[in-house]
Length: 458
Ligand code: UD1
Ligand code: CA
Image (cartoon, rainbow, N blue to C red; front, side):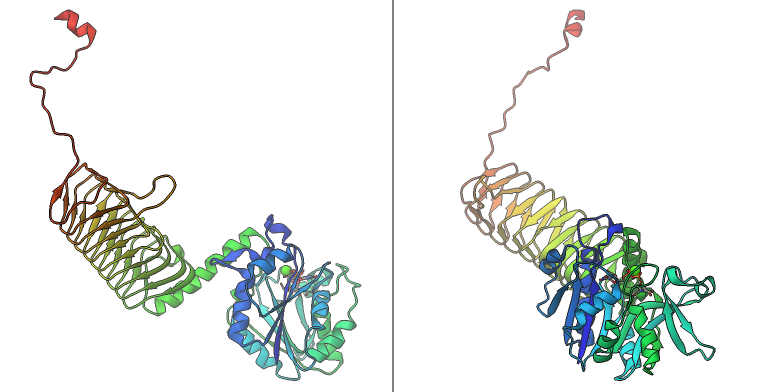
């Protein structure tokens, strides 16, 4: 059985935040959730998360019934953290140790690590870096056989020159690991129980230490401060962009690409710069998304054009529709095929029928619009009386003149025409012209007033 222990008790002081570090998000998802999702991909059977500071918030925000939450009230080192968790693990399981603040580790690298460890050996993920920085160093003997890990702060100047570093990721037989953990001591530079000391014990016990390296070195990047977080975010997005481009998505600039959720797409779609995708977004074939758009939980049909600076949320768009520039589609809207939604138009909880047009400066809320309707510039559905919301219904083929207000609840019949500038408070019959507008008057001979100084001169 594969059991995972995820260390996540660190305070994250350098984030300067009230939020526990592992709840900070990468690509819109808490970093701990990334690690848990990778465990699911690995087929791990039991997940143990060691938490500390702000633990209750973690349990609230991370919705995963399978997690066994283990509190580590005081952080006395990585060895101490794993020791607390190991009592929850079956002796004949394989244990994988992961980190809540290292979210980009891939299932593939971990599979390689598990394979290296097998049933009897201890697996250790190492990486070769130009500068080992503050990472623990891998010490090998003259035959290049693994000897031990020395922490940077305990290392001699010569050991500091070693390029092979400890990523922290390890796989080990649980029973053995438990025995080694009981023997840990804390007589080191940091006065902590070092998990890394178990490797020397393994060597002494004649247990093989097998090392392997991650698919990409960027996978082992840990997050300690907001700069790390931003750097990891960019690497993650760049990586996603590469995969999307390989599957045929045109991305204008992978450096200005942000998917914070799940994007699916058909053939020949394109996404311009500065587009943010959140939640579940599905694009059909040949969809184009213009620059500076925000799309959250959207279903978009074939050949739809979303033009620049549009904001679309929790709605569906039918094929061949044109949205934007500067459109706002609010939740629970359904824009049918061939419809046009134009600039400075807000649609909320409304259905816009096939080939209907709302092209300029409108608010359409709680409205059912039929097919082939034309909504003139500046039309407002008055759906709210200050206490309750009401519906507007507009039949097929209706024409609503510019700058009209439709005071809901109200129904405009099929083929009805509403004269420009009307305030419609009662139902308008089908196929008739309805308008509410004072008659136009002209006062003949009327003169504009003049300024006093000008009238004296005359
Ligand atoms: C550890 C390794 C080091 C390795 C580095 C990789 C040890 C002794 N050293 O060092 O060899 O190069 O990781 O990043 O293991 N944590 C707890 N409880 C604790 C202590 C730590 O949950 O009591 C968690 C932290 O939240 C963090 C992780 O364990 O996510 C690593 O702890 P940290 O103190 O950062 O270890 P390093 O000093 O970086
Ligand atoms: Ca660290």
